[in-house]
Length: 452
Image 1: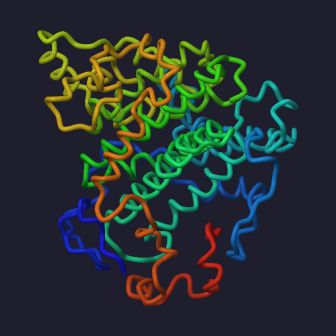
Image 2: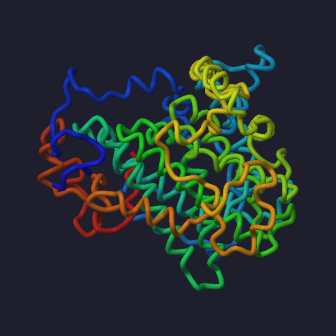
């Protein structure tokens, strides 16, 4: 079995049984960031089962459908329904449902069933122009695959005992693979180059928000690597937005029908990262994304439940004066945990200011702005940049990140389906390979649908 990546842990690699004295625990992060989707999954899956491939046979999932870059309608994501419910709590407590089962049965299920009855799911957006939940077919397929891959690196899903951080490392590995795929599209000479970049960014944005997967990533021990990786996928977002602008498609009637929605995905998944130490230059891309949103004349009402508020808060953030920097730091410390009880609470603007603290004062990833000359971040940051083929220095930043990874970037080291049968047996609670009934040929296929 391959060893754990050296930069992620000081411990020796290999399979081991967890004990109560382990120095790595999920509890520290669970006490801060509320997991919005970690319960009632079985009820949700039951509602959605009729739209998924049969899961009992555990066979490779081979979907068919429209052309890869055609758009389809998708169901309103559960995280948006749940988030709107939390937002109702902050504005109208009597309208808030505190029980997740009630959120599913009283809020999510009626919406889902209505969309099914009207034949919206997977249909052409031209048939349902009022339905804002759309996605490229290729991006939807990628998001489905990513959901499975997240399970592949979860020992609990297989009844196995590995490092407590195994799933977190696996999540980091998955994101690294996405960045490799994005880089390949970035360097491509294909006339569909922008679409190929967009499908990666779109799929990752939706996937991160579902089941609050960003929490697994920010829980990594290697915080410097985590910060840099978050900065890197933010750079990917800005890079493809610059390409879309260069193609004349940064507009409300863009051929990229989910343009506003995808930007909203990233603003949502990152809105409270500064409260967890993910700050400075590694989240500076958020303001630049808002700049693209405004420049394109995009509509916040065609986005997520809290997109308008996320944008308004980021627009209030300015570069701090040197004299006010100390006060800004103190203010952010006071609000650092302000979203603990309400996972969708709109944080005070002081918290957003943390992304503008002098990067020299903290060890963070390289700036998101071009390195040749200093430029103030803000809504004018996207002006006159579209003609530059690599406005946000993607190639440079990707290479820098890749060169710092040991022994390599990405891969399938933490994919449990790729482990040997003997290694799975050694880590299984019952001493049996949890995938013993899956044929070797099927294990080589990717992805396997392993949902119960």
